[in-house]
Image 1 (cartoon, rainbow, N blue to C red):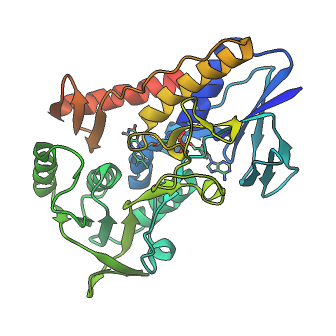
Image 2: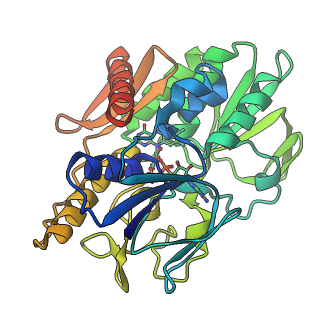
Image 3: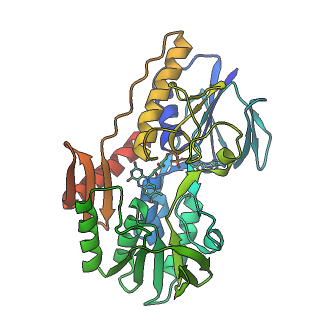
Length: 355
Ligand SMILES: Cc1cc2nc3c(=O)[nH]c(=O)nc-3n(C[C@H](O)[C@H](O)[C@H](O)COP(=O)(O)OP(=O)(O)OC[C@H]3O[C@@H](n4cnc5c(N)ncnc54)[C@H](O)[C@@H]3O)c2cc1C
């Protein structure tokens, strides 16, 4: 049997598995889905798990079952591209004929002393659970500092405000405004929401050090009960360790079929792949569908078709009742309840699609 191994059952990897199972898989091929978890974690909602407004269970999607699909749960430690072997923390190595790398991303701490050791993070399911414990055990009227005013920083600040009205919450960014990659009017809307909901937005901050109960802005020490780091991402360590061509963000350079140029038996999907836009679940899903079509075509001996990935826009939440969106209907900026409802709709759809 030939082994088609998919590393990572996230937005990209699981889309490929579902798409392939929906069509036909050659009888001499076995799909092997590998993940450290026995379910998909809906990462776009990790901010709400961290804040304590949804339960762990609500963010899990079960993996499919099929007679040509084997599921292997374990921690991947390395990939040997030349020998075509996956190594695990425990258990036997796994050989593959074809491979998909879809292991997602982890935090980037920019060499800030203490940041990795003393910050809470929301880039993996288990780190998010630890963040939930830390944030929800803070004594009444304690303080939380969120580093990074991008989408996940904004979402966790707002969600935590709803979950813990007593806390002093600050969101720190090195720029002038949060959501710097969004239009000015959306940042202004979010700043207004923060003002109304007593979230302190600090601009032009440079975090130089994190300690167990302190964070430094340049040389100024700020006492805190928790630091949440949302100030950068990079592909996971297994990908960082691969000696192959990467882009400046550390993502693997791929050809037009999303394969590693010198290893065309290996596809890369989602946050690990160098694509012409920022990593997102939406991009991972669309790219996953395309990879499945490419693989199907190659299996049938046909010429694979490729299409440019067209993204539909980005939605963000400010708690459960407000939100924002950009990139829809010719660049309209959406604010308030409608984008929040749309975001809930997207979550509902991904649960149905994957589950
Ligand atoms: C708080 C937050 C909010 C976000 N909001 C949005 C949003 O609104 N819209 C949007 O489009 N994107 C959003 N994103 C980004 C989005 O979640 C990612 O871009 C997306 O999850 C990438 O998909 P992926 O398939 O590459 O990786 P993932 O979905 O992260 O899947 C990777 C999988 O690999 C597994 N894995 C990783 N390492 C190992 C290992 N060593 N061994 C075994 N298994 C491993 C993980 O368990 C996981 O299941 C958000 C991210 C965060 C953190």
